Length: 434
Ligand code: HEM
Image 1 (cartoon, rainbow, N blue to C red):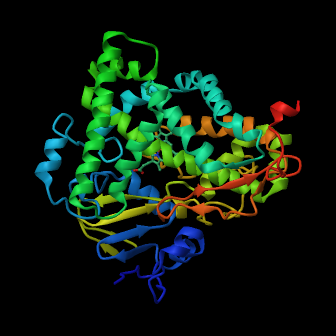
Image 2: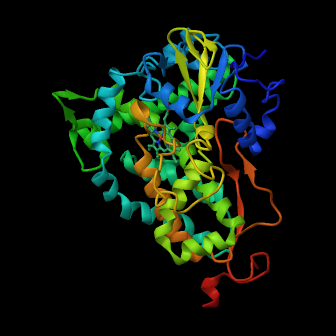
Image 3: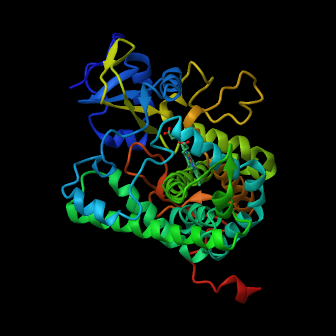
């Protein structure tokens, strides 16, 4: 079933199969923006695709709430044994995080977190992030070949988040595991056993961060996690549960998104050698390049909102209680807002009349990690690109995209680089050659 706007609607549901949405959703988005800007893609599930409409929805938090109306374990299927889940989570009951809460409560927590993740505190992390980049890349840079997603783009954001949260570096793997566990809840209905397993993972994560809070309160350091325990605004401080929730949303919101920004960037550079060379020659273009990657390949293509009342948009009635996906990925290609919307234009900002892309959203939920993610991307490209000459996709392995149409980026990306792409040749390690 599909309800469309009053403007001439396409005859068939344009999203009958997910495969085109994953490979290249942009022609579908374009058709929707033109013909059916508000589309009911499944009963009670709507998509909003135009830039101005996405802005309207994300700014109107009273009408379009971020609070999922159901238990978070029930995103795609009801929890069958809620009592069991509640018992597992008793020490740290699930409550809305920044992402799935609304003003004014969300605004207060957000203001405190933003005070900690400010420009100078993030800038102070740069040397440590650069070191992480060098550590993670040193072995494969000598190899001339890398599976970039697994060997770099996935571990880097997890290590940076762990660093920013003041967690032990040895906890990076565990942080990734917890983030994956939490994300499984959005991947479809789970068995009661699996739901309990995920709840145990969340409880373990909460316990870890509770003990870290206790340590930092007892012996304050100057890491950002210590600052979270002390930050104050108008006499208000974050509670322990709120701090654990911040850690949780950082793990969930910061890992895959940054991984997808990095993999999309490297995929583009591996397929456009001239562009890669332009950035090597003029590293100051790395920042505008990343902004264009974020715009064109928004890692979070869409996120849900939950209408609190019946609301009409482009002649379509969206009932209270339904789910509305704001498609940032489509808004960023809106040709009424961006000239040559599908092209990567390095001097877009310099052309004037620039409008901000929505890869990090805008307004009340604007990404609190945007500065950190941009820093990771800029430093990674600046340090890796000069060493990855002759960058190309490996010829013997296909890049693999994330299978979720709400996310865009690669889960597997094999790259070759170096003088002769001779990594397969039986050669001694460079250390023995030099
Ligand atoms: C390229 C990487 C990233 C992208 C594309 C991205 C994207 C987004 C988007 C679209 C939102 C808005 C959510 C909504 O509309 O409901 C958001 C919110 C958020 N992001 Fe990011 N994010 C990235 C990296 C990070 C990182 C590295 C962190 C932290 C370590 C982070 C932490 C957050 C938090 C805490 C929020 C919630 C803000 C609020 O609701 O007040 N993000 N992000």
